[in-house]
Structure formats: C-alpha cells, structure tokens
Length: 114
Length: 109
Image 1 (cartoon, rainbow over the protein chains, first blue to last red):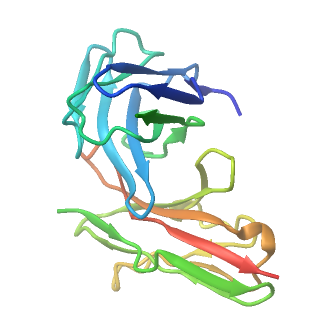
Image 2 (image 1 turned 90 degrees about the horizontal axis):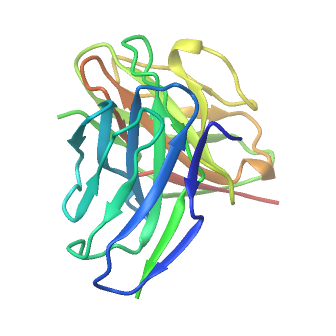
C-alpha cells in the first residue's frame, strides 16, 4: 500500500457543516478522481482533475467542491448543500496517458453526518 | 452514452465450483476493460485488464467485442475470492473510467 493516501479514515460531522476530505498521492500522476461508493450503486464519479488548477464535474457533483492547487493533492469538500452526504468516499489517481486508463485507489474515508 | 452493466448484484457459489461474473459494456470504439476487486477491509485494487491477457489469482477475462462483454471467470472458486468486484470501461478521449454497479461474490464453504 502507500502511494495514494486519504485521511481521516472515519469522519463524523453534524448536519449543516462543511467538511473536507484529504487525498494525497506520491505517484507523480497527473489525474486524480473522487468517487462515492454506496451499497448497490457502485462507484459514482464526483469530480476529476486531469491537470493542476483544472477539474471537471463528474456524474454527481452537486453539493461538492474540489481544488487542485498541487499535483499531489486533490481535497474534496462536502458542503451543507449535499443532501445525503453519509457515504464512503474513494480517491484515485492515474497517469493520464492515452495508452492506459488504469486508476489507483486510496483506502477511502467513511463520512457520517448526523 | 458509454455504460457498463453488471447484471448480478449478488452472486453466491460453493467452494470449488466455477464462477462467472458478468460484465457488458456499450461503446462502439476500441475499449479498455478492467476488473477491480475490493476485499473486506482493503482498498479497491486492479485485478486484471484485458490488454494484459493474463490470469490473476486464477481469474481470467476475455474481451468479446461481438457481444460487448468482458466476463470474469474462475474454474474453481476459493473462499478468499469472496469480495466486491467491479467491471470498468476506459475509452479514448474520456479521461475517466466508467464503472459498473459491482457484484458481491460470496464463496460458501
């Protein structure tokens, strides 16, 4: 393991509070991704970034925000506008090469909002 | 739109029996297909990719472009194969993977 890390492993917040999830990688990968994993719904893409200072919305971006100020870091903020924030969040990275789309995943952060 | 379908949310087989996890995709070009696996309390990890044409942990998967399928197979299931399996599609210009909904495989002793 290693290479891509997420912290914390578990996170608890009160409803109405924003919370930021950390994702760091030392793989020198250009691209980074945030997914949400819910039982029976698979992996759903929230945001992704192909290069520093640029990012795109995924399939379920509403209520989330991201930044990509450094190549190694891609933090995700879950805002109070996210209607159902309790979930398991996965960060991933890839080389962003035309010859490979393989992604490497972090260990995940389980967010519970009450 | 590109899509990956895993028709079985749950699959249960007995130890030693053959196992097949189905994956169908929709994409008219040249796809890159992956199988990812998530064991209990472990991170999601790549199991195999079609361009490697290799067998990992006894699993194989063949890309069938005619049927747009990439089913994962193993002739003799083992208890340690119990996990969540995701099929994923990569394609030129997408800059991202499209994942199926996943199949939870349980191997009964």
